[in-house]
Amino acid sequence: MTRTKELALAFYLAAAVAGAAVGVAVDRLLLANSTTRTSGRAMRDRFAKDLKLTTDQRSAVDSILDSRFRAESVVVVPIRSQLDSIRAFARQKISAVLTPNQQRVYEQMQRDQKARAQEKK
Image 1 (cartoon, rainbow, N blue to C red):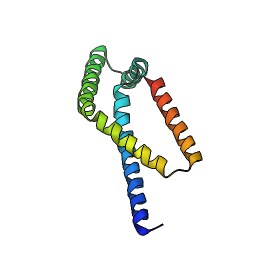
Image 2: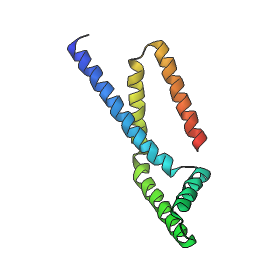
Image 3: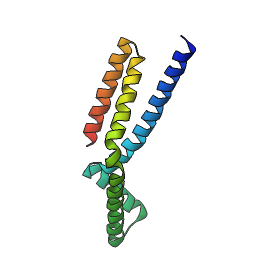
Image 4: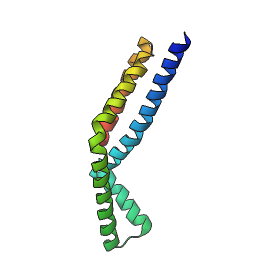
């Protein structure tokens, strides 16, 4: 492999890793914002129980958290399509360096991850 190809491959892998890191960070942010009522409610219930919050405190904390999730959504929604494009580009580039067998496994990993995300919604 030539030096130029090695540099290009290193660049693509670095871009994929950076894209994955950004994707994971934003995905975590979005998942925190789109958690199901049950899991979100369970987290809030545990929080209130651990801190022994009064009813008034619980109401105030719930309002603060609701406000936080709305504010985070305002920040993330406008860049969601850009983040999706970055992730798709990284997936393409990763797939390009894999063998056909690895590509099949990678595609299955992507389907499994998508199914897990859907289960959480």
